[in-house]
Length: 261
Length: 335
Image (cartoon, rainbow over all chains, first blue to last red):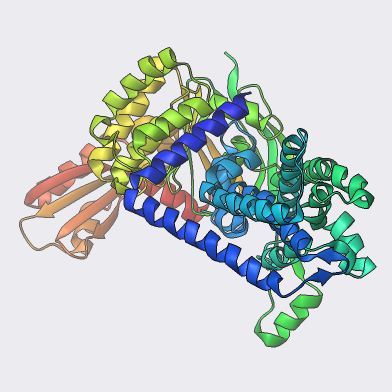
């Protein structure tokens, strides 16, 4: 309960800070919208040339992509930790975090949130609606709830993987360039995994389960019965991966050496 | 009374790897690294009572910050026991930190972009401080530190002195019984320093707040702390009253003379040949300093002898400053 209250306190503070720079906010809003519009057009153009990919129709692939954008947007809003090593380990900002009575990872999430990234979710939903309409999908009453559940699951999968990568900094001194690589691998989850080689598929399902951010949950809404089990595994995988990442984080914090001053 | 801080055989070792020189060395480093275990804090023990103000001093790299970080739960000790406010700082960290306040002089606790009062308000929520408590306590803090005109300014627009006062206030939002200050007045002007000292004394008296202070500014220690813990190379080399440190290692008194006529050191030596005196001449001014044992009779005897033989313009009796004492200890070691 306390964490939820604190979360909204930080959100309110974030908005206030943002609103102090009115011109900035306006420009950012416009540029975000433009960015998302360009993104949307890009997707339609790229997929316009492919009609069938490994048994999936063009609209299905667009739908998966649209779905992927939603958990991804949530992930980028709240797990903005790509510069964790420099900012918190090398500069020693973690010192400050550790002297406050809130879980350190949660504080990082609060401090680094970028709510503008949520716009990406709107694009994603727009893409899904477009693709859904051309596919003639029907929405049942449970769908919005399941959608929410899958989106959160996907976000947790993504967040869990990146928290684990950030944790490397606790053990290794030098900065690693794994982060950008992971962003690339993360993109593979946008495409139907059965078009890949079985090894890659296994990796994307169980090792770096990016498939749970895109294909698997989206498949449920596309009515792909054969993927049903995987679809419903999404929240489970999210909880497992995120849970493991918290455990690793907690033991990493014990190894934190601080920055000399 | 219960101790606020108990430290037993505390040790912190860092694993550092030393790189070999040159390109060839770099390649060898890739395969096998030379690890060295460096003890930053080496087997220290001390207690701090509730309400005490303790100065924690030492040269750069002596292990001050490392100790503070272990006491605040940021770092895990390699071995040894730490109990602060009845808790193990690292194990119970989230619960523990709401009983302490921390100011790191070189690191900001406040949010850069938001107004000072917003930072306070957010911290108030973080530390679950009730409105009444906040009102009564913080109103006082804000007034004493003179923060009213700064409250609606964003932190990035404050000067260093203004920011440090706000940092101090922020560390006290939950009115902690124990306050850690790591070089709180580094780079501040005299007026702000004085204000902060006054304030620290006041909260110490009012709330019986324990304060552990590290600083390079010894006047600060002199003004605030009765007890000092001195650290060198990760070990405690002195723990006790500041006064007895002076008595023990103060190298007697210095008496400065200025004469009306030209005087040579040899003259002075012959005048005072009967007593144990060391004469020194100042390089820039014609001032001669006699260093003698701190003994009133000896001093008056010396002055009498000098005044009888030479025309004196000015006499000045000085005690060795804490700074000199500490410099001497570091130069020569404790023994």
